[in-house]
Length: 245
Ligand code: 13P
Image (cartoon, rainbow, N blue to C red; front, side):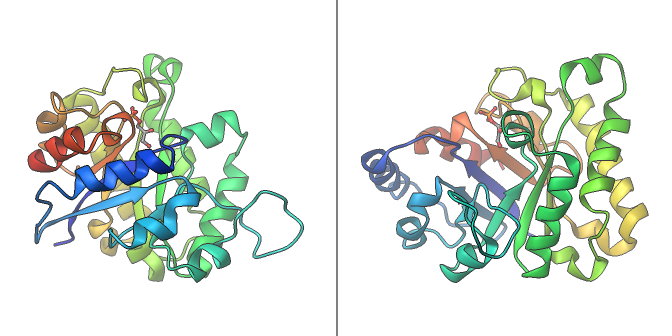
């Protein structure tokens, strides 16, 4: 059995003093578990300092080329050289605000897999797709494209996060029936693409997870944990999620 995962995606939040305070508050709670793990995805600036406190610190973003004239970018090589544990790929904010299309995301998956770096591949439909009942088809396209050159021998690197765009930062979350349907669909797609070994790929939910809705989300079949934005910025709230996982 793989560990359940509670992952904090801080996005572009928290300054250095705020990160220091976050760690101090975090250390005031009990996070011991044999069955669950915490991951932190901070701004890249704070990765080295957080590695002193957390066994799993990941990067929110990178560029797929190994090195070169790409001002402002970070490569997998650079991130690996400081001992990063994993990366996020395909987050809807990167897709929408920074125009990362499916082809670009396929390249990022290839770069991470080539360097044997674990990654969380995010997928999620918008509200029009959900209301138009094309959400399953859309997720299938996103995942098939992102994983088109991914080899099943690397499956242990893969984690999926289903994050419906209409639920991110909106206070609206997918309900249990919607999550159950989508997670079952993603599992069957992974099994179709990669065979029975794909049964152990963790599939997380993300989108307005909070202490009020966490129990119902975590009780859905196939939900292996959560990728959390807003509710990860306060260690007290984040710990309330941890207790329910
Ligand atoms: P919120 O939890 O703030 O809705 O963000 C979810 C998310 O985008 C995590 O990657």
